Length: 196
Image (cartoon, rainbow, N blue to C red; front, side):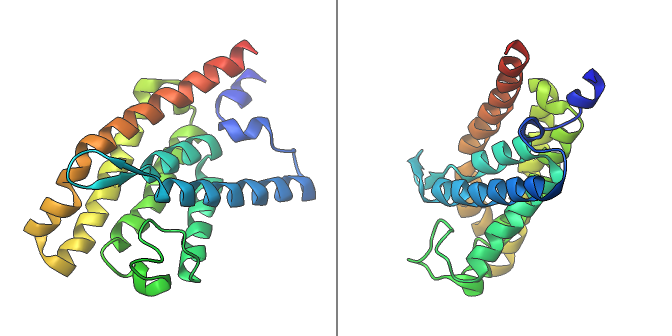
């Protein structure tokens, strides 16, 4: 029994074992996750010359709590909501909506969120979410890949030098703080669960 519970993400503690109740709970969690992603996109923290959202923190926390499959499904649902024109992204509706917005300057970062969720979710499925050291390694990998995807897409639009200056450099410190925070919070929640 102990082995089975150490290799499951946090959400497994609340999910019904099978059937319609499990599916309904997963759907509710995915919708709640997209709401959290929307709120985190609209929440801005000023750390220097650019506003930074809390979205990468939300992606990492959702992925670590939900595990690979449910996290990726949640991110894909979030992107689908945005593609259908709902104002769920940081710059919507001010800077456009739907597919046109998604193909703009943030397109690579949005796709990178799915990869980020997959990596952090897989780490949770493997039980790495109990250890801040293992989890921060997975989350840093996820962060680097997400930023690389965002940079590559932006570089095609405005060139690599400008992409680095406006699309990566201003976000490094803030994103490292978010990774450290997420990698600390999730193991702390597991420690509380074990005590309870």
